Amino acid sequence: MAGQGSGGNVIAAICNIFFPGLGQLVQGRILAALAFFVITACCYALAATVVLAIVFWPLGVIFHLWSIISAARYRPESL
Picture (cartoon, rainbow, N blue to C red):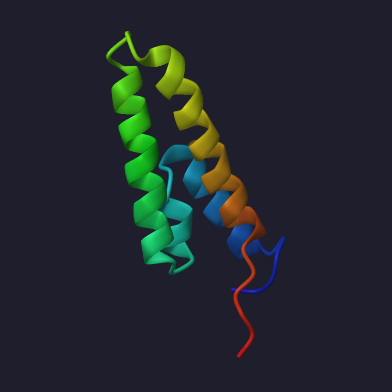
């Protein structure tokens, strides 16, 4: 993919809106994709317990937004 702001990064960011980590997977960053998905999914699952919603729902939203921004700003290292 090209640099920051390229069409590929926009597509990756849009993918992350629906599934956190999917954009990183599209970019070929498997470990980052797995980490964003697992952390965000666990936060949302714990928020579903209602008792823990005050803590884990905002935390899940923060990680979800972080995954979107990370995909949009990704610049591959030049070889």
